[in-house]
Image (cartoon, rainbow, N blue to C red; front, side, top):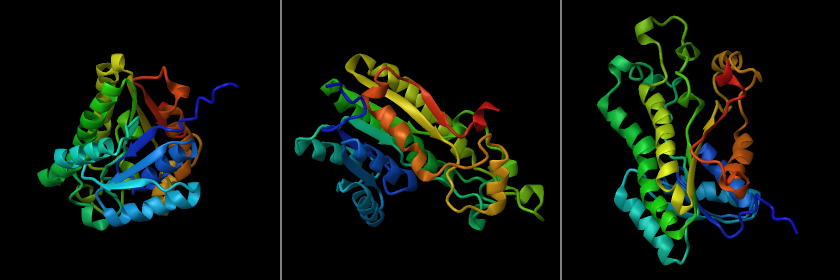
Length: 274
């Protein structure tokens, strides 16, 4: 019988930021092809609700851990507890991030570069970039000792081009008061690609490979003006549905991609090729 390259039955996957929109989708995607799922997030209540959504769709109940990706102690505890329960982590999806919503009035002025606070910089960098580094440090090291592992960093199409700030413009506001995509988003998403390339060679001889997935905009009932502007920049003329990245996650985490290493897979409906 031919081996199903997408079958990862018996392998264990840790997903960070798993209570978020795509974190749930990544969990469902891997549960569907047989993985044991460990969902982690800093918000325990949201995490419990997210795990129920995964169970309802897959009939598989994930394990959950309340974990702070900015804390070495928190990650070390989860890593050790998994190991003490005689499990080994085979797959890590670094999905945790803070995605400031530009259309929310509270951050319109503070999002601008000249007004952007160092506190916001530190928080967003710590979650989005430092968190991926720390999780890779602990879980990746264990993978290397085991001789096998897959690390996926969830980046963005904004890892390959700059944000088009015209998407976020509001009528009747002066230039100095226009909302913008914050600088941290671009720096983090570009940084994740550098992290991906570094890790891809660092443990390659230990059987650990690392790639990035860079989604485009996912439709979540955003403002109609924003959606219309963004669609005009996408050759497929639409935003992504939240479940359209499941296949890519299954490919990247399974033996179907076992010779793929250090790459950034951009799935944005063609926007980045224009």
